[in-house]
Image (cartoon, rainbow, N blue to C red; front, side):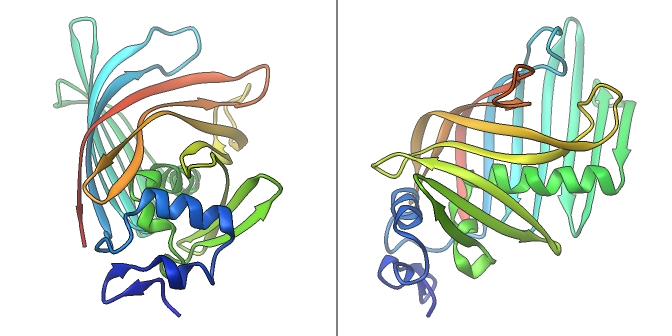
Length: 239
């Protein structure tokens, strides 16, 4: 039985399909009776850095997420007198990352299967801004391990497994996973612990999601590298 009723979120039927902690999180994140959103358009700002010893750069970004399918991100950062524009996207199993100066001069362009594997993990992490992505209708599989939630999403035939720490009121405090990345000593790709921490949340329409957050590579190790701090400005949801 679907957790949707005529395109609306129905917690009563969902209760038969997910563990209690997952239900608590989903009811907190999605207003009962809300229209199912398959798309989110997000604007946000904050600070980012590429390596531990490099300075923080201020940025503003815009992202579109399609539930379980794709993301497209455009961001602008200031590096002294330089304006750096980045574009990252994942869709239909293909990922691309581009960097331009002043939006015109190409500096870097990356693609390939390693970037795509990393991007699949990113899609699941950033889908916390589109929590309807985590309903069983989109292929989400939930389980509980002690006080932690385990979520598995199949993205273009590859499973992405994340661990969530949810508070008693349903707030998602932390999300962690092993992400494919080249942030290693020799620059080769490997599975690296990654975590996102919610500092504040906010309600946008029918959805309550992380609105102030930070993210780290090598999370939980002595190499932990916090690289991202963001505040969400707006989110627009559509079916």
